[in-house]
Image 1 (cartoon, rainbow, N blue to C red):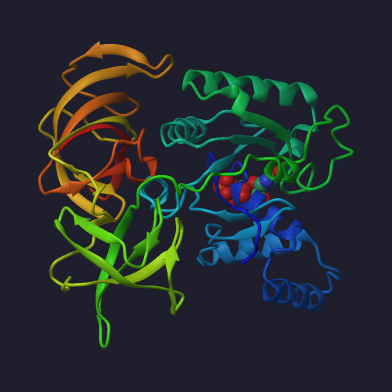
Image 2: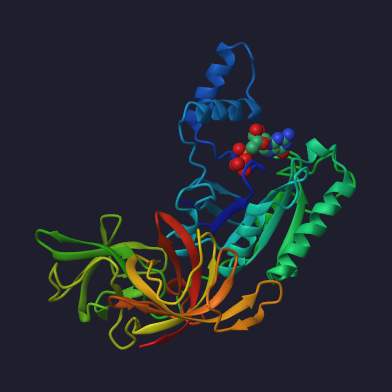
Length: 420
Ligand code: GDP
């Protein structure tokens, strides 16, 4: 690990617009492709008499591997710039991208949106931009990619920039938080080096834009929130819940409360990376032990917080949702499974309160009879079992969820208010 501040980066965009190639290029040009992978490809290149070693050869091999059905996992790859240490969180196309993006571990701070210059704004471009906005991506760097395919034509670039700007305006994503770079992931133009092929462009390269992102502020000021992933019994210690601290600080000696199980006690020990530590902070994966708590007292989906500022348990909550895909219509009474942090709870959509106009964000209809794919709405939700969840304005890390049904993510949303 590096000492540089950390950034979680999402790479989003329509299929085939060049996301994987761009990630490969970024890793390659920052020297982050694992040595053994480079070595393997270098050897193969020499054997095949291709000589030398270049990016295209690595990517060809990745393409071959893909054809052979080997998954190239571009998620969870890491690279660094002068300022930051980046982790690429789940990428679209990954089965659980949307769900993961919303529910915690992989929450992205910023995003690179890849839009192919020859194809322009495509359906998934819209979908991902909408999602990025709903989920609170701070800054978006738009790579207008495959510039080589359009002969590095400035007018084509401007056209795509204008279309993407319209799209950002439509979903009310602040355009001052977006920047644009003409790239070719394949040829390497404006990725880490300014390209001679785009003399009309004198802005930052993609890597410079990433380097210039504002620093994400770790949520240490918020109260402790630690969603429990698992509960173990370890001989000599006792019950050890494990999870990742989303917000706040946990200290040995703190009085904590687990909700909705509604038990609590004093933190006796905290362990991280097999070592005891006196305190832990946001992003830390910890196991800890609380005096008097047995294995059956708490479970996955509980949230641990300070006893004097315990995690909120919702009787009902009001939320803003975006319906991504649903074969028919959603009406009041519908009860899919909500995934929020580590909890999965069936929840009834008790009422559909407002339908929003996505182009203005204003209310388009009060109490509509139904909503469907593409709609944004405010709904009132009643969990069928106790669920700990927070208003996203107060603790965004614990205020978003994915709605799943029939093996698909059908909607995503964030909590506006909680009725305890
Ligand atoms: P993804 O589905 O968005 O991850 O797209 P891929 O990275 O798999 O790229 C899809 C196809 O476009 C592949 O055949 C790539 O080689 C090609 N491609 C990606 N970026 C570029 C580029 O900048 N220029 C050209 N000519 N082809 C590209």
